[in-house]
Amino acid sequence: MQVRIIPANESHAPYIGKAIALAIGDELVDGLAGEKHTPEDVMNLFASLAARTDTQYSYLNSLVAVDENETPLGIVISYDGADLHRLRVPFFEEAQKKIGLKITGAPADETDSEEVYLDTLAVFPPYQGNGIGSDLIREAYKKAERIGKPLGLLVSKTNPKARGLYDSLGFEAVGERPFAGEIMDHLIRR
Image (cartoon, rainbow, N blue to C red; front, side, top):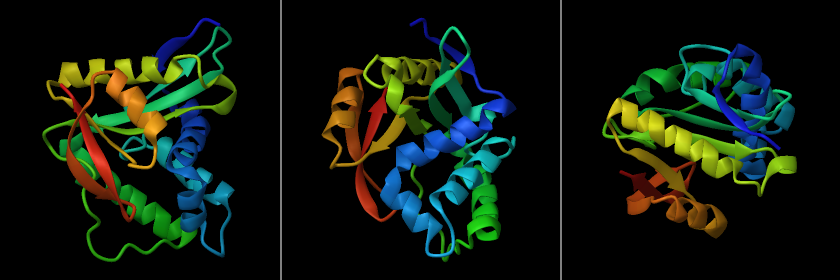
């Protein structure tokens, strides 16, 4: 299979929504859906945010791995951490409208202005295990280099497989940060 990494466009928004749901996992998706909504509603929320140009999940912040038939195989989303507060406002607004999510207080920042943040990495299940995730991370790293900042990410302490991948690609632990009620390892690739 021949794989290319391309900039996402608006038509990739449904795939980006699925990738975000895959990356955050069923437990968090179900938590966002609550009792009145479905996991599909959550994916649709993320897809609608991906179709916009002013969100952290925008297609403008996304790269897509595609095969020779242009079938999306995986997605990586990254953005300059200095833009976090501006980019997540639409998420809060849309989540309130579409799934009734009420954010009280300011959530902890998962990134900062000193890094390009790798927000989401997902390879769709039929294509996992073929090095696509590594290819997507390398392209996100090239983006960070162009911006002139290190590439940072958070990884769950309970996900040794992902941690092993990040370690093999040159990421180093620099501390911890909270995300979605969990303390995660903060990694940087310089």
